[in-house]
Image 1 (cartoon, rainbow, N blue to C red):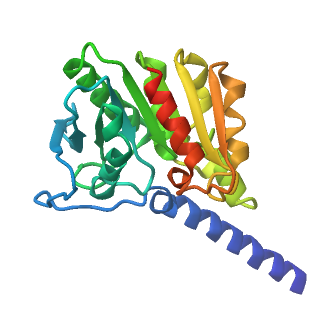
Image 2: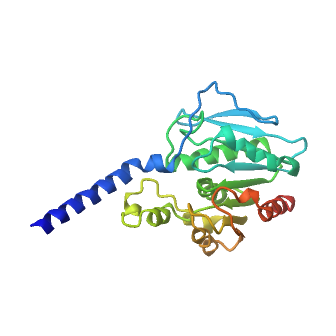
Length: 264
């Protein structure tokens, strides 16, 4: 009888854990910082604040950083905790390489309205890319995705003509990450947002360069090592000692990154 009671208690706790995982996963995945619409961004270099209206009536907020004679444009897609209040610092390492940079906040982040979903990640990114193409018809476009943004970047690169795709600390499949982090839970079955870059990688025609750190405990390097299996254009730079957030601190990363952009 005691054993039966213990089994029931364990089962109830397991079900409770599954329910918590299911209902709280959006908060764990989308670490959103919101800004009021009148919030003023501050950077040490000039920028233009932009707003795009989506077909369903929402508003996407972003920034554009420009140089005098750009040789190309970079669409930067931030990670799950990024926002326009700090992502603009990305331009610091770009401004001397003669590229304009466009970035935006996903729905529900910063000043962007709405709620992030798999479908809107894709449709919004395509809308921003098409805006860039319209405004820079003669210039090559590079997409740089960071972590979550690297998945969104694969979708765009599979559906539009891109010069170069940079994937920084990427995951191949969000279901795999869920399984790694919560091994006793049926994470893949309970996952609301089944983001799988393997769905798009085989369709990408441009060069793909992956940056990953061998000390990344958020997205293990084994995830990035699977990406070349889905596309023959992939090259990979492993940063020894790098984690999920500090790759830009390493000279190897900086040198390779600059070389990639200078070759275009």
